[in-house]
Every structure is written in structure tokens, then in C-alpha cells.
Length: 489
Ligand SMILES: *Cc1c(COP(=O)(O)O)cnc(C)c1O
Image 1 (tube, rainbow, N blue to C red):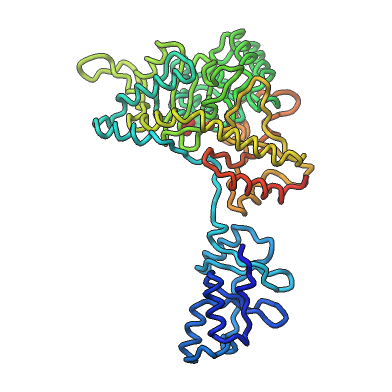
Image 2 (image 1 turned 30 degrees about the vertical axis):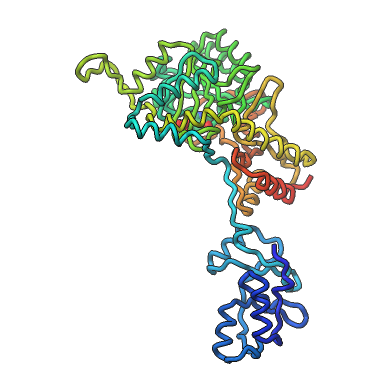
């Protein structure tokens, strides 16, 4: 904020002095100050121009300036308040007054109007080249050389045999369930702490979702809760057709025990790695553990094609069948012939070009997001009320979103912290609301981790902080400072 000394003028000052002060202040406003130091009103160059026209003399004093009530802010104002006030009055500067009515600062719009968003797209240097190539060669179709190359390049990067580029991660989950033969009357288990897109495709297939709690170690699917669900399913003679394991906020679930349970009960595992591209579990790429894995390239994910997804597997026949189903299930005949119901789920060659460019910077994006998380954690380490999403020994998490919980004892809860951050134009969000708490899934069965539902607690106490790979150091510092002001150690 500005040094306000040069901006302060008194009624006894004449136009010559006051215009010189305005010129020197360079802010476009002056602060008319009473002899006792109290702020009276702001003075703009328009006020001075009118006074000059009226009096015709540079020697005229400010005595003739009308008394008006100026727009002011109290100390401790929020950016939101300041910005709303500026917008409401179409002004760019507002004086800040202390309790005694003295001006202590002038806030300027450009100092306070920067919004920090949760996660925004971050393009590299080559996306445009791949897209231009598609234009130049007129490959504007769903399918084309970028699609083929994107599939190959992603499969190689994560170390899996085959990949099908699709219109969204949701489409990839839907096709995964379809490929596994999930249909009406079947049950599918799914992590409860996730985005609705993990579970909706279960319903598209006419099957029944059953939700599984998280554990405290990774915040992902609890092996104990999965086992409880499988034991109950077996007792009823109705095991699930598939288990969808979600890797939350860029961290793998504890795959070994989850896979062991699925093997033991003969249930297929689908890995929803929409949020965990670039993460590893015991050194192996997240998304490559199940019978099928899916990634998302939605706009807020770690890399993006603006919208898109990928289905991956080591089973070539499954991926070929996914491509067939995703292009309207056209039989190999000279005419249009269909023996099955298909979908229009393929990725366009243009968007695949964006994806190829993004893949080239994936590791940089992962490192940048990890650095943001580590900075939050280090800079706020002394605030006991905050607990950061744990990263177990076996995990290399991308921290797609930096997530933490706040203990209720601290006198602050996550909703209040989110509100206070919003006041400073910082976008934070609650953790995903568990699926078993969603009105649309209220009838579905749910298996807890133990006596307590871990996901309920995480939802009640947790939040995600801005995590973009394109955030500046100064932005992270601003968030840290704001949290520090709001949450006491
Ligand atoms: C984003 C997301 C999806 C859906 O991906 P889209 O590409 O947006 O359809 C599925 N599951 C999880 C966990 C996600 O975060």
C-alpha cells in the first residue's frame, strides 16, 4: 500500500500546492485531512478542475470544496469488501481509516484484485504445434494421427500395454464397466470419498453402487472396509462385479491389499486414476494396477485437453473393444451395421494434439504441484490445527490438489477457513462430499473403515487449497500469510 504522507492536504492549502501534491502522489486522489489529523474526504483531479473553473485562480484554497461523505474502508478489511466497494462506486482507490478516523493507507484496485483459483490449465510450449499440424493436414476428426500417438505416448509413459483416448474420464469409467460385463442387477463397489463421476457410470449400466470408506493412511479406499463389504456380499451370495478404486488428489490407494482382496474374491478392479496421473505406488505408475485404469484430462486436472479421458489396460482385446464401442459399435461391414449398442466416446484429433503437448510437461507439472504442497506444509508446520494429507512410504503423490484437515478444537472449521480465504479472493474448496452422503445415493449400502466413518470426518474437517502448477511464489506466500492470520497455532 502507498505511503499516504504526500497525499494528505488541508483546507488551507491553495490549488497550486494541492495540484502539485496530486502530481507528485501519482495516485489520482488526495486525502483532505482536518487539523486534528482526522480524514475528511477524498479529493480527485476532477474536484480540483471544477474548483479552478469556479474560482479562476490557482491561489484559491480548498475552503470552498463541498463537505461530502467519501467511500472508506476500516482497517482489517478483506479484499472482497474492498473490491465490492470499488465496483459499486466505480472507483479504483479507497482510503483506509483507523478507529480514530485517521487515514492510514490508500488501497488501490490493482493491489488487491488478483484472484487465486484452485487449479487452472497450464499449457506448455508444444500443444499449439500439434493442434496446428491437425489443422494443416485437415485431421479435424474424432480419430487421427494425434489420437494414435497420444494413446501410444501415454501408454509408454505409464508403462502399460494399451490405451484408448476418449471424450472424458467418465466415458472411460463407463466403458470399463461395460467391458467387465456390468449390467442391471449387478453390484459395483466404489470408493465413497470421490467425485460423483466415479460412481455415476455404475447407474448408467443399471447396476447398484455400494460405497466403501477411506482409511486414515492414504485417505483412499480402506482395505478393512472393502473386506467387510466382500464378506457381507459373499454371505448374501452377491459379490460385486467390479470394484472402482479411486486415487484421491493425486495419491494412489494402498493397491497391494486391495488387489489381494479382489483376487481372493474373484472381483475385477478398476482404477479411477482421474486425479493421479503421474503418481506412483511402490514405484509403479498409478492407474496401471487394475484390470482397467482410467485417466481424465478435464480442465482442472494435472494435465488437460480441455476435456478428455483415457482407458488403459494390458489386455489388448479389451482396449480394442473399447475403441469399437466408443465409435458407435459399427460392425466391419461395407454398410452401416450394428449388432450392439455403441457410444460416441472418442477423443478428437485436435484435443489429442493438446494432450500430446501436455504429456511432455507432465513431470514438470507434477514437480510444481508437489512443491506447492511441500511449501504449504513447511510454511505452516507450526500450526498444529492443520494436518496435511498423509503421504505413506509407498506413495509418490502428485498432490494434484493440496489437501488438509483442520481440527475442530482450533476454534476454526474448514467452512469458516474457506469463507475467510474467499474474502481474500483465494479459492479453496471442501474435500469431496462422500457418495454415501449424497441425496442421489442415499439408498445405497455403505461399509465403514471401523467404528467410525473416516470419510465423514475427512469431509467435515477437510479442504483443498489452490494448487495450480502455474502459481507464483508470491501467490503461495499470500495464501500462507492469509491462513496464518486466520488460524492460530
Ligand atoms: C475428474 C474426475 C472424473 C471424471 O473425469 P471427466 O474427464 O471430468 O469425466 C472421475 N473421477 C474422478 C475421481 C475425478 O476427479
